[in-house]
Image 1 (tube, rainbow, N blue to C red):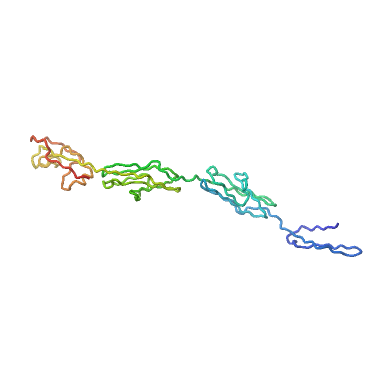
Image 2 (image 1 turned 180 degrees about the horizontal axis):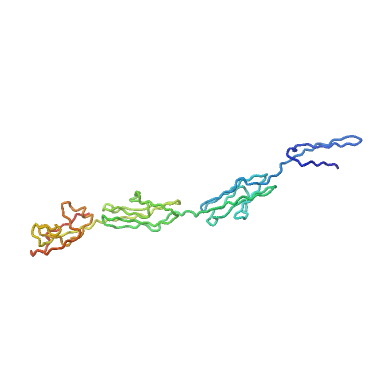
Length: 296
């Protein structure tokens, strides 16, 4: 049996034919031609695009992808924290639904072929806690005030920060009322019965508080009495408040609302009671006159 071994081949040799001529004293014979096929040498795998770090919210999945070169077929094996993941044998890998316990885990892939093996860099998974929709833990209370006073409404809400607030009066947004509490301007009796609620929102949802009802009572009406004094008729009296022989009997301080509503022609009591004068000996026990400010 005769044989022939070529030198080291190249792909340029592919397709060449080889035959053998056999001779002896009786004659010559030529074999059939054999064709040489030269395949390219296998190229070991390389990573051309590494897996990227991923950030997701708890409950979501995370996807990792690699791009590798080299002679096919390429085989893939993904690993989590350097441990093989069963069934994760393609160029990409998607995790199950994540939890915050998965945060900080690393994912890499081992790529192999007949010529060698390469391992990608490790990508880190970050899992943020899922946002919690807002809830109202303390509802606004129903306040009762007197006309001229302000009323304050407060809510306590839970949920993932930041929380946004929008107060409403009778279901209409109040401009600038965007904190956890709201204080009205000075009230009037026309505000009585108004409802106030607040809409609390964050990235996960929105909740509206129950409506609190405002009650505004009218300011109390007070009667002021003049009594006889020692001043003669027509005298000015203490602080100029006496009118024809009368003085204020311990006049109280007027409220702002009463001062506003009192007729402009009337003379208001002093801020503090004047020193009372000894009364005239007239035998009169009733006041000279009484006055009641308008209802406010």
